[in-house]
Amino acid sequence: MPMPTLKVTRGASAGQLYKLTQDELLVGSGIRNDIVLKDLDVSPRHCRLVRSNGVYHLYDLGSKRGTFVSGKLVLSDGIPLVQPVVIELGESVALDYQPDDDAERIPTDKLKQPAMSYLIIRRRADIIPRVYPLEGDQITIGRELSNDIILPEPKVSRYHIRLERVARGFILHDLKTSNGTYINRHRINLPTLLQPGDYIAIADAVEMWFTDDLDAFKV
Image (cartoon, rainbow, N blue to C red; front, side):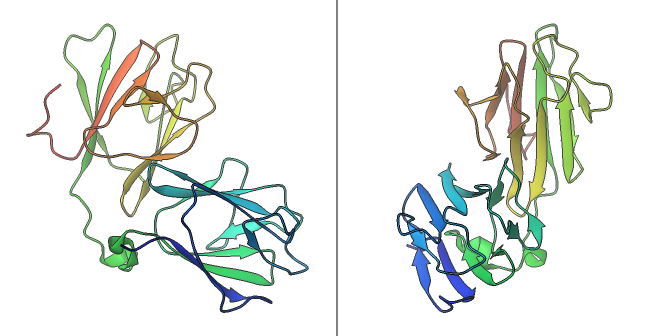
């Protein structure tokens, strides 16, 4: 069975291959890390990999030289690793990340994408749920009028959810809200890849269902 791997392609440990089997791994130059990279650009505790719902998320731990994914700086809220990417630690260390899904080893531009994904949303006052096609690469949901999907409910934050389109579908980000976001009745703290049929809730105010097949979907 394939498993995620990290291969060092630049730096003092070039050629070293790491198979990722743990749910959480620390990367840095200190000897207490799970992956030790002895390089001047690597901080003692540089970054952290955390697996959630089968997907690793990468977090920078306040490193001096920064952590980058395909040239993008990794911030405190992390980046989900859902396809092959290059991870750079500072300027002198590069790692090639490969996920454990065979489909992700196909170049992104050759992956077959579903025709459309949808959110079916029901507020407390709604008798009939509303259907929202997910057409953008970034979709925000919240109480504020500038959101793509506006939910004028007191328990919904001004900016509550961000949906990010990736090769495998959509990743849901809770925007550090007070009432939280629940997927299949579990409160999420990390970005989560949505699966068809997932039930999403905001407190007791809003129910949502994610689907790519409206004909087969029943609330």
